[in-house]
Amino acid sequence: MLEDINTVIVIVMDTRDKGVFLTGGAQGLGRGIVVKLLSLGAKVFFVDVDVERGKATQVELQTQYGADVVFFQPADVSDGEQHKAAFDAAVSTLGAVEICVNNAGIMAEDKWEKVLAVNAGSHIRGSLLALEHMRRDRGGRGGVIINVASLAALYPKSICPSYTASKHAVIGFTTSWAMNPDHKDHGVRWCCLCPATFQSGMVDLKRLGDLDTDTIAEILQKQGFVEISQVVEGVMKLMRDPDNNGAILEVSLEKGARYRRRQVVDRDGVSDLVVVDTY
Ligand SMILES: NC(=O)C1=CN([C@@H]2O[C@H](COP(=O)(O)OP(=O)(O)OC[C@H]3O[C@@H](n4cnc5c(N)ncnc54)[C@H](O)[C@@H]3O)[C@@H](O)[C@H]2O)C=CC1
Ligand SMILES: CCCCCC(=O)/C=C/[C@H]1C=CC(=O)[C@@H]1CCCCCCC(=O)O
Image (cartoon, rainbow, N blue to C red; front, side):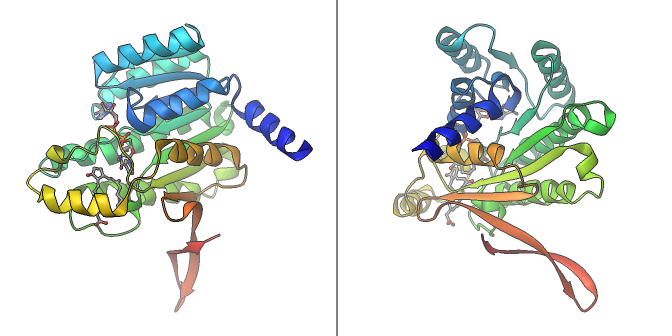
């Protein structure tokens, strides 16, 4: 029992008064993460391209948690200027950003350039903005960057190749920065989240382009959905676990939350990174 109480205290202290910047917070997983962080005492600045839904979410959450702890700014994060302006506004509003969650994403195989710009481009830009601001060797406070990828980042998915490519890019970028030789001086942890399918605005078969929606609906029905609350807990685990720089956390219905390790192996004198199983 005492152990349980201590655990709760550690979690609360970890996020209380921390400044959070999150993309795609108006609905779905992003909104779930915002709500959880507010309930743990963090201050959250979120952006979304869906202005109406973003404003409604802000009003609802300000009523529940207070007008001085949650802020919304409309921004299309596939546009570099809008994204940077929003990040800068978050820093001046919150004082500092210590947690950055790059979450905004789309599934639209008939618009592959947009898919890459949002799912990969905005995660890369958001991470670089956050690193520059957070890094201790340049006067920042350190922090954690969480990039929302997908199980589709770890396997090929024949029904959504562009989406899958965008998510593979997120893993490659995030784990590469985690291996930076100056990482300890930066004081910034790099993490990836790889959830299985969950019910959200994205699971709208009309948005998958020309694909056979009946087949996909059948696959999804058979696979089942992980709960958003389980995925949010995965994000909290990534934030809390102190020694998980470079972590890839998978969250699935069958296996729950489990880390996947990438390891450096030496094959014939050539160093290589491979995904190995869980720990
Ligand atoms: N729903 C699922 O089954 C899974 C989703 N994911 C990932 O989780 C993340 C969140 O997705 P969901 O909550 O499912 O989707 P969602 O569609 O419910 O929410 C995504 C939010 O991102 C916003 N957004 C989209 N493009 C944007 C842009 N250019 N600028 C700013 N905001 C933008 C949307 O307006 C929306 O509010 C995405 O990165 C997605 O790829 C990962 C695995 C499974
Ligand atoms: C097990 C695949 C995990 C992919 C999860 C994801 O990032 C996106 C999920 C979906 C969003 C809208 C959809 O319709 C999604 C499902 C498409 C993936 C179906 C995978 C079927 C397969 O295993 O090949």
